[in-house]
Amino acid sequence: MTRIACLLATAALAALPVSAWSDQGHRLAARGAVKDLPPDAAMWFRTLEGRMADHASDPDAWKVTDPSEHPRHHLDCEPYGGPGNVPLDEDAARNQVGPDRFQASGQVPWTILARVEELTRAFSTQDPYEVVFQASILSHYVADLQVPLHTTANHNGDETGQHGVHHRWERGLVERIVEREGWVPEVRPAVLGPEPAKAPWAWLRQSHNLVAGLLRDDLGARLGPPEKGQAEQDAYWTAFMELQGPHVKEQLNLAAQRTAEMILYAWTRAGKPRPPVAYPTGSAQPSR
Image 1 (tube, helix red, strand yellow):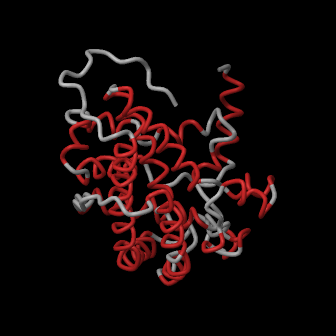
Image 2 (cartoon, rainbow, N blue to C red; image 1 turned 90 degrees about the horizontal axis):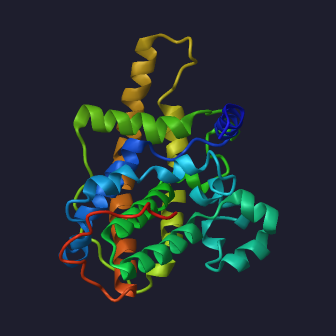
Image 3 (cartoon, rainbow, N blue to C red; image 1 turned 90 degrees about the vertical axis):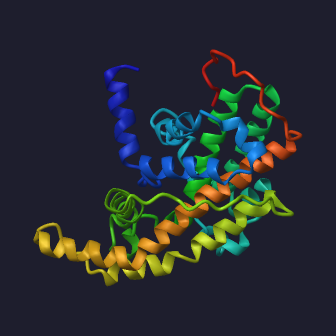
């Protein structure tokens, strides 16, 4: 890529909504997912937990060069009349709101199912490196759906005069939780439900239900303008952490557990294969 093209791509990315979580958050969710898997499925990830975490933020980097990538990370519920009205079928959703609005509003639930298909195929290849890569990418989209502001058109608080709330919630709070508390997701064993293909729509409803409280608490913490002193800024973060810190932790716990559920779903669809006794010494570059 030429320097000019790179600058243009970077500028285009900067104009897009803030990415979900931080690299730190995605790493936590990916590593947590491995711990939530039952032993037979977790065998695929033995010694490769670091690789799982290393690729967990790749889809955010893809946005720089792929204009079609950004809508895969969110779904605005408003065009559908609320999260309970979002169709399970992708074509039905496109017909309901029209192709342009469908594209602009996001497609994260369908992206998750598409990534389950990729992971199912990866399990069939018997290549642990491809399995771990595809599981890592899947973890990114599952984690994105656990961010409440990824389910609303008011993704960054601009419509309510709360610009930057996206970054404050999913990055500012995550950094404080991890760096000051050393927090990691709880181990919550994954259980495959009776209709796993419908699960992303249940997650969408659960995440969206947190939006109003998140915005209310951001206002309640009384963030001052940039020229405010450090004491006022510290007071905001203390209050916001008390109000929303537990929600951030819970959504990261769910990101890990729900990723594990989707990995378990793909592994089951592939026939619950066992990994090779000896891992290959090398591996081709993973596919997107």
